[in-house]
Length: 439
Image (tube, one colour):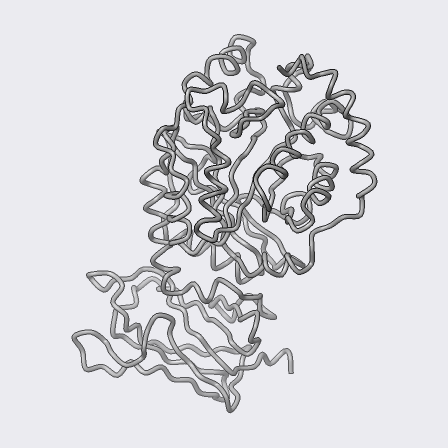
């Protein structure tokens, strides 16, 4: 089908380029960017037919032998049959964990499409499964009020292989601006994705050369946000300092984006929570990855991590959503964020430290960057400040201004785990406070 469509693609290419050229100044909508900063937490989903092998997604095609490529392209689709795929289960887990948007690999670098496209035979249509994975995902997101995101790679390894080129990235033939047939091929696919599934909230364009595709998406759906391609998207690290404007970092739960059945080491839930706090305090969004099994299920190890995150977010989500960075991301050793709507409301993240903070114990901290006002109030997220189970301790939180700074005194009162040993951050909410640097 690819080769038979080649003439059509060549014919469409000048038209596509003209469409993009006429919309060269289109950018992300400013109001939507403010919404994006409110969301805070997203779930990335890397899934393709080579999850059957547990290999790196797509990249095993680079430098592969002719025999490997032949079997990858022609035999591997025969095995991909995710009969346990339940998009609603994915979305419900994400929603429980406080995720506000999801991003699924519609097409990774290998060129395999998870929807029944008219542009290539290398798609879900040529598998035993056949059903439209993207349609089910989009419908599930909308059912549970989850923002819908697509990952899309313009660097189509199969397409350039069919053109007779060596499969590689960072090459002239892999760039849409210097390979008009590849550009036209991608634009036909973008046309399908952004015409057949209704409004799409966000898209992650994974290519070194993606501007023309981004402009075309803006033309098709002006309210769709582009992350990679139009904002800073550090991968597997958090910048040392806050970045200007909206930005997003993405992390794997293990060492690989796609499902890795063996030889894998996963991050703990506590590590994931620490990454989230660090990212949000610096004004970024965290896009944390899941690699579904070939069956369509989320691996138990990854689900467990998300459920630990879910418990923490159930208590402390207020400090992660609808917030903005403070003048400084930290006050001493404590991360801080503040409400996007009420700038005098600040959230202070208190780590457990080397010695776990036992239930019913009081701790005190002095903040140097803040001061009280006549309206100042203090509380601990998730607690009512009145009861410590099985104890007569008074857990009331206290706040006062001293000559050394703003002092807070709080008790960890809520019983989160059966043994009372909750290892993750406690979040203190301060209302009616001021930043000294802003006075």
